[in-house]
Image 1 (tube, one colour):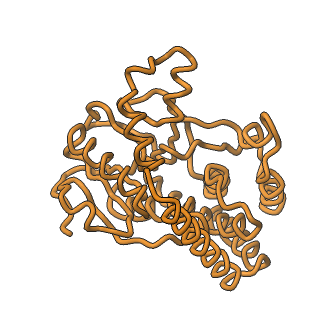
Image 2 (image 1 turned 90 degrees about the vertical axis):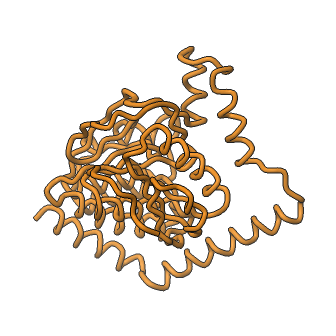
Length: 293
C-alpha cells in the first residue's frame, strides 16, 4: 500500500486488530476521509486489506504483543512519530462528527483530553489493583507521585519534544512489561503517566474538544450532565452496539472466547519466558537513567 500524498506534519492513528476493532476503524477512516481529508490516518492492523479503499489511510501489518493488547498503543505511537511531527491517537471506536481544523497547534509532549493525579485516580472511589505496583515503581525510581498524572487513553496527542518522546516510548515499553509480569494487563493511562515523568516529557490536559467526536462512555457522561440529548447520538450508539454485540451463534461465541483466551495465555507465557521479574526491574532502572541523562 502506498502512503497518501500529503504535506501534513500531523496524523491520526489507531489500533485495529481483530474483526470488531477493524469494523470500528473502517467507520473512523470514513469519518476522517470526510472531515479531515488532508490528515492521514495511520492504522496498525492484522488485516491491511480491510483499508485498501481509503486513500487517507496508512495501514501497517501488526500482531498483538502485549497480553491483552492495551499496551500495543505504544507501537502505534512509535510508528506515527517515525513519520510525523505530531500524532493524535483515537480509540478505533471513536467517531469524528465534524470538520477537523487543518492547522491544530499542539504543545510539545503529551496532551490528553482528560486525566488527573495518578494517586487520585487509583484511590477514588476505591483502591485499584495497580496502586501497589505504581508505588513500587515510584519508590525504586525516585518519582514523586504527587507530580505524576494519569490520563484517559482513548484520545491523546504526542508531539515530538527534542527526543524526550523517544525516552517516553522506551519507558512505556519497560513499564508495561513490569506491570504485565505482575498481572496488571490494562490501565495503560497509569503506565503512560509514569513513563512521561521518567522521560521528562511535558504533559498537559486539554478538555476542550477541538473537533466534534463521539465516544460511547463519554457521550453517556455528557447526557447525564445535561450537556447532550440522547436522541442526537442515537444513531452512533446503535452503530456502536451493532459492532460490540453482534448476533452470533452460541457455538461461534464460545469458540471466539476460547481463541482469545488461548492467545492471551500465549502472550503472557512468552513475556514470562523472555523476561523475569528481576530483568524487568533492571530495565526500568536503566530506562530511568537514560531518560534523565
